[in-house]
Length: 342
Ligand SMILES: NC(=O)C1=CN([C@@H]2O[C@H](COP(=O)(O)OP(=O)(O)OC[C@H]3O[C@@H](n4cnc5c(N)ncnc54)[C@H](OP(=O)(O)O)[C@@H]3O)[C@@H](O)[C@H]2O)C=CC1
Ligand SMILES: N[C@@H](CC=O)C(=O)O
Image (cartoon, rainbow, N blue to C red; front, top):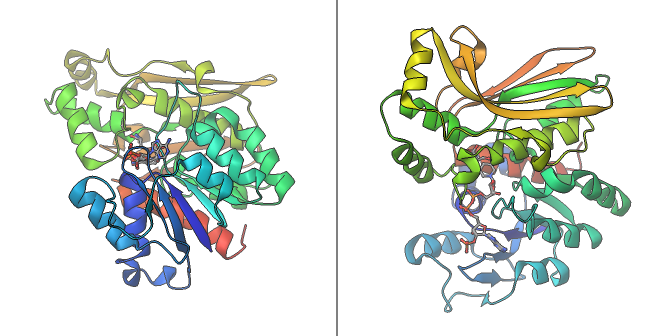
């Protein structure tokens, strides 16, 4: 299977390491035969090699020089959009930056270009799914290709896979959870005495903050995730702009201390509920009892609770995820396509 990678940041490089130098460590990946024929970035250059880009060297070079260098095999200058429209490949991996202001663009156009050419798509980028899921789904169905995006919400934890494969007879009526690692981590570190700015810096160093961390702090990443969930598993038609959203900027150390004195804590909770014919979604800092399960989700952990008409509620939780979990979500989708499973 020939793949092109759009984006070679934290997620792209971790994926590349797993598929190259670290592959021998993972028994379940031994049959996965993926040839990456192109890697595209915004400012670090791009590599095209129809025989397969040397992934180990691509990672090492970016980590050493901060970009690809002209002496590398396949070094070139091509925009991701042109690559999606013209290169020979089987699956496009969309791993570029979340964009709210541009409503998922340019990643949305990369995905549309691939689907129109009947190429499979795997996206870790939630923007295009949050803003245009139904259009993309129709396009994928028309072209008889897969559009998969497990890592858009809770990295590799099986949220979409679980609903698709295990809740076939159920209608989802409500979802809630803690879906943004960065803000959950910041709130924990502020409780421990760190400043907002120091906690953001730590989240950036750990690799889970967005390229623009205000997308985390202001609740946009969480809003995008609740939209992807609501649109995909509840059949909603909402975008992040319609989510009633409040970030954590106004949460003070005093608020956190006051909550603790009442045996509570503050979490950025996302929810989506069916109301007659539509779905209402919110993201807001919420006071939670220490006995509530959500209060036990510490640091960069996440949780989602899914209520259905017939079965449930079901909770999926993720403890201390890292970039391997996100890369795993992409790999799981690749395996679904590669092995032609559901
Ligand atoms: N990090 C995480 O824990 C998780 C991330 N995600 C999502 O995965 C995606 C990638 O995240 P992450 O790797 O951390 O992000 P980074 O900011 O580390 O990397 C983003 C990459 O996308 C590239 N890029 C941006 N715009 C374009 C463009 N127009 N054309 C080509 N390349 C482009 C950047 O290039 P350049 O460096 O040149 O700017 C960079 O290589 C994001 O959408 C994020 O929301 C999902 C789950 C978890
Ligand atoms: N910035 C996001 C990364 C994953 O989507 C987060 O903090 O959860």
